Image (tube, rainbow, N blue to C red; front, side, top):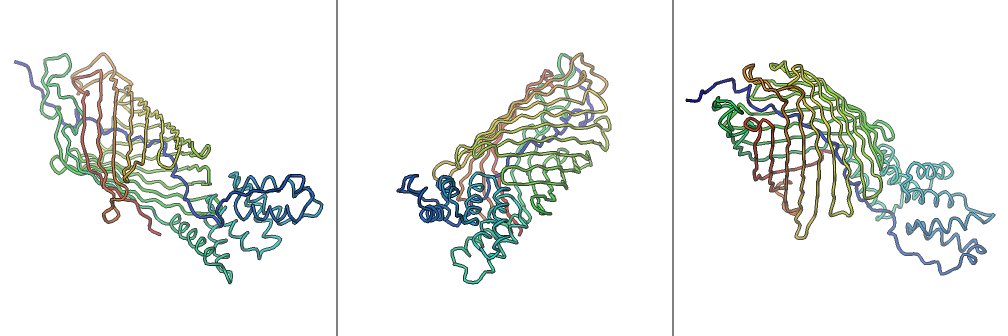
Length: 469
């Protein structure tokens, strides 16, 4: 008769995996109206004719500026600057608009400021300057200039409408961002272990706690964040992220993590970077499990209108309340490259390398992950997201179980996962968007009877994000 052994459930239950906070991509900038719609501009004149006619060239340059025609502005400005008599404000205005169209917002701001220094009564210039401040994420400066422009008498209604839209967007930027999610959980293997009845190549039969456990409950997330504009493009960043799982049928596997960031952020139209100290707490099975103090560095840049690069790194010192053998540090390096060919589709590829250092070496590991993703907006208001990942986890020392089983090899895991979500963009209930999700995960371990498993589930997610201005 095969022997049956009993050990503490906590010893053999799968450790809560480190939540790798990968490099996150930036959202696309807000699309707000300009002062004029771009229209085709035909000269109808040769360069030689324009070179001998200053009034005509000036009039065409004025028209190109009003109609937001960068190519025409560039061509006409070259000709106009050959004349001995020039309007210096017109030249500066043309240079400012051209720099703005090329994404050189700092130079555009300098030109607009130079114009206002010469003539502060030019309200159109002030509005253009405020728009560039908005694009360059200089919120305080943008609000100041928009409010000055809005206070002008006899402001045309259409221009007042444009200013009001920008002021509303700026108010939302400066407000609190809140997001939350909720999903039903029906786990058939909540402890992520193999269903094999024996322990490797031994005669020992697993007790009940070492086999897959079932649990029903809810998963939830709540996020709160705000950027406080200090001066120009410099910000104080605060955010708090709470993630949790509560199983009403098996509270031993309840899991709650909370991370709070408070640090510095620099933001501009094309890039931002952050230096964020953080404090993290985790509760597992309704008991204090872990606390961590660390630093996160993040950098995001739009390489052009279609490509974006995101980088992140973390270091944290981790302390465990009961399992002191896990005490150590966590390191992470992450990169994500996003390609967005149009407003309805994006693709990304990313990679993460994280290292867990523990007091007892066998619990430390290196985790390497390759991530792929695709997002698509379809017809009939349907959207989809597909995320794939492949991970390899290598532990640092030979596996020992309860000082009874000592193996002559280190644990190695290969982890495959796929997540698909579908939703209808025009389905909202009290501001909440329901999403249908499918999750599949397979872990292949060299300790097959202990750590290999496959998990899959369908879920209904409820998500919402809103702003408290």
